[in-house]
Length: 138
Image (cartoon, rainbow, N blue to C red; front, side, top):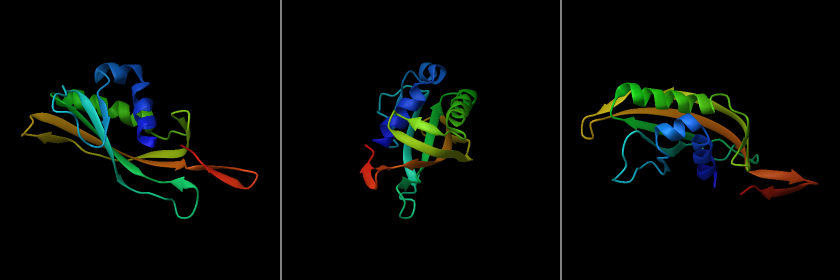
């Protein structure tokens, strides 16, 4: 699954993994017992890239922390990891290109947390083709 590969890519960065204590969740929500700083992410748009064997999703990586500077620092690292990335994610998904397409600074008074979302667009291959036969990449 692409989300697992993306999570693994984030946690392969020693600084980020240590900063958020491996607290990175797909699906857009964190467990109730999550301690900031942490990251949640989910797909906010995109899908198939026309009729080609590619996906073009846009994911939002929400970086939460008690202090603004810490939320901003985590968000900057997420952006660094994905900015202009090309290569393999998760030993499985060939990524042709990524782009940072949005960032924002938010304070959430209900939770008393700073929230810095980073939006990343991906273009990755879903099928490999060998001798005219397309095989889904899992």
